Length: 339
Image (cartoon, rainbow, N blue to C red; front, side, top):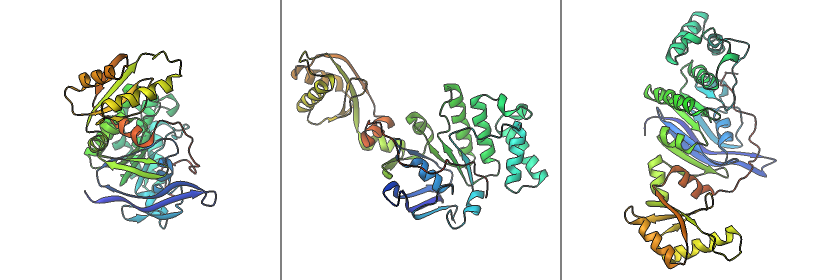
């Protein structure tokens, strides 16, 4: 790995006198110039982790450093080393595009001339030069998100934190922001990204950590994670009603057990959109094998398809499909201004 920029050791956060554990002693190392993804269901501890790394949440235990600076012992110094793009629009709506950038530079101690030069360079860099005088209220969602990234990187931070940066954006704006992130990485920017879009993590991240219940349950490259969960083919099987009168869930549970009995080398996955999923070793002759097993088990197949494992496959295999509410996560992640 390249030079470490983010390092945590035993990082922990609890609430309610230790009764609620939001982050349970995580160890992370993120290298310079890396795009690192942090994934997990609601309540997994992602936002709390970002909050601790960006100094807006005080850890209960463990340590965290950014560029060698302890975020608890020296929060003001750490703030100078980070840029933050939160989930929600935090631009100053009373200012223009250019003024948002200029005053951000001033917040970080730049003189007038330096802040103006940084503003102009950033406007060019993010293709916003022709929007410098535009009121923020007149910007589209995608353009506003691009401006927030421009603002967060104006002072050349060691680490850029992107907390679900494309949430709510249309597909074109999402792809445009992906291009922005790729250009930042090409320029050597270290990025820590949280997202609920598995494709986004797969496309952008060098490595991904999956969190659940405050712990890291898997960490590898996207390709490595996909290989670790299933070295084979994911098969989706839609089945006809078996006529037993039982509810659909019971029917599918029985059908899954019957298929696995016929295919003992396969792993049964979750039910997705009313269809069974199996992971079958190998990549050739998979569908005929599954079809023969279904016929032997007396099952009527109405649809059958195969695909390679995806990050979503990994995510669901490790965290499940149940919808859950998370523990308290502390104050929202801020804008990265020094305090």
